[in-house]
Amino acid sequence: MKQILILFLVLFSSISYAQNKVTDLKVQGNKKLKTSFIKKMSFIKSGVALDSSVIEEDIKLLKRLPSIAHAYYQVFPAEKENEYNVFYNIEENFTIIPSANVYTTNDDEFAYRLGLYEFNLFGQNITFGGFYQKDIYDSYAFNFRAPFLFSRKLGLAINYQDLTTQEPVFFNNTTADYRYNNRSFEVLGLYRFNFTNRIELGVNFFTEDYQYKSGATSPNVPQELKVDKLLYKFIYEYNNLNYDYQYVEGFRSIFNFQYVHSRDEEQLPDFLIGWNDFQYYERVGKKGNWASRIRLGISTNDDTPFAPFAVDNNLNIRGVGNLIDRGTAAIVVNTEYRHTLYEKGWFALQGNAFVDAGSWRNPRGDLGDFADAQNLRVYPGFGLRFIHKKIFNAIFRIDYGIGITPDSTQGFVFGIGQYF
Image (cartoon, rainbow, N blue to C red; front, side):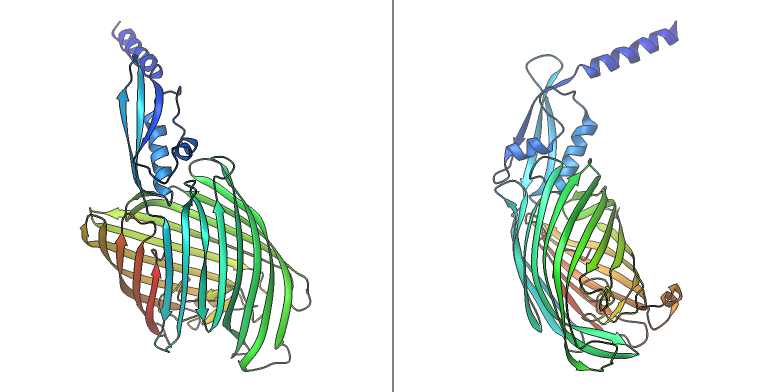
């Protein structure tokens, strides 16, 4: 009899819970961000069952958006029994953001990139902007990204860039400097399956132009090379990160695969390239955050001086210099501990200690190259983060990396946003 009574109570409570309905979703605190957009993004709607787990997923997704600094919810009874109003409370970010990256080494190299982006165009969480770069030569780019343009799952991205740099080319244990230009136009379709999984699929039309400047020469390495290429791109992301202002916790994985077809297959044959970034974040006490990234990458192992994986300050190893080597495969590990030193109102000051390490496979080499001391770089260092909590990505970053492997450099890396 007692077991029957318990079963009845469980069944009754389940039925009662199932009868709880959402009368209305109300949005508060948003100014520039459209209420209609927030409702389009949310699973909670008028008439659906009241489910706290669904509300929590909505809030986590909203806090990932560039236009939102913080979000939380409240639930209040409506006029009718078993009906409730759900309130989503929004703290907006300021979203017209300048960007800046400056990097230097003890070899007196100096380069910078300045940009301006709007991350909430028309109040629809659309990103539009561009940048200018000075790295010996002038470069620029424009970017448009609307991940929810057509629905809460389907969007579009369009990118154009004219990028010119001085690139070191490595062959026969010697080095030459080339003026490298990449002019490209890219269109991507964006699709989100659910809260944690999304893909990007598209095509990139680009032209690469190499012009010899100085250094070693070889009859097997052209001094001038200009070729049109077609790149097919596929990106898959698993994202289960949760944000609380400057703190992040959770796991994220981004897989990027590309097939590149060249119009001049004799000079630059077709090749495949793929890499995966694994990112893990953990809260440490009230003020600490441990962050780690592992990148595994591999491409077609052609014997080419124009190998795709670069060793560079701004990409993977802080303090190493501006594009000092290339390879056809890469293993990179970045790990750092971030600690909030001071926080008041909208401002937070973070300190960090990091270790960046990586190794590369030489063109036409084998996997044993990863263990070669000449390919291994290890750079510990430290830095500061000046954070505005109500402006999207308003994190001014200063890092100083010190190489401890043979023939290492050291230097500052400045930028906007966390390094990863």
